[in-house]
Structure formats: C-alpha cells, structure tokens
Length: 108
Image 1: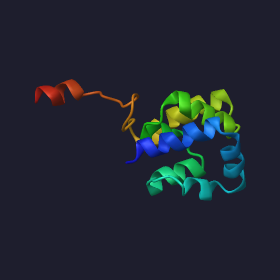
Image 2 (image 1 turned 90 degrees about the vertical axis):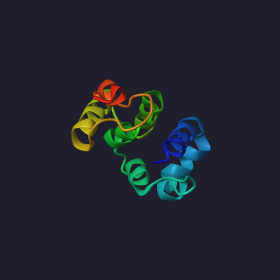
Image 3 (image 1 turned 45 degrees about the vertical axis):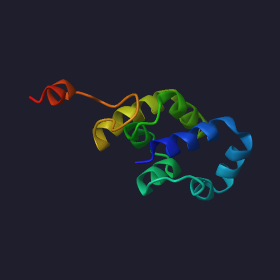
Image 4 (image 1 turned 60 degrees about the horizontal axis):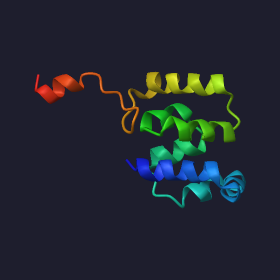
C-alpha cells in the first residue's frame, strides 16, 4: 500500500487551487501523477470516503477532501462508519484498529 502517496495527493489537493482545478477537469490524470495502487486510485476517483478511511488516510486530510467533493459533514461521518462495515478495520495510519494487538504482541 502507498499510504504516503495517497495522503500526499489528498493533502496537496486540499491546499492547491490549481491542482483542484486540474482534478475537476481530469481527476484520472491528476491521480496518475502519484504512485497509487489500483484500490487507492479507485477510492480517490469515486470518491469512496469509507475506503479511503479504511486505507488509513488521516481524518484531517480526508475531511477537507470530502468538503472539496461537496460531501456534507453528516454524510462524511456515515461514509467512514460504512467503510469499516464494508471494507473491514482501518488497515494503516493513525486510526488503524488494533483490537487484539495486545494478544499478538504477548504471543497469546
């Protein structure tokens, strides 16, 4: 997984008006500038907020991307919940779900 590249794309998209304009004109071409997996690329282009969350995108970055894509706050929160239900626990990043981690570390 290329969480860094995915996060970088969304971070830059959140801050750069010219990149936003380019993304609006041709999102696929902008996504192609970053080393994304097919899953990540699809999640950005759709946009699949729930999958982006599960992939590990930081919520501060993700909420600005959702606003850019004109997703209402309540819908954004629900999409994250739905993402966990549909795609499983958060896989990477600061929100990675670590239930059972203590047992794995202890070798239980």
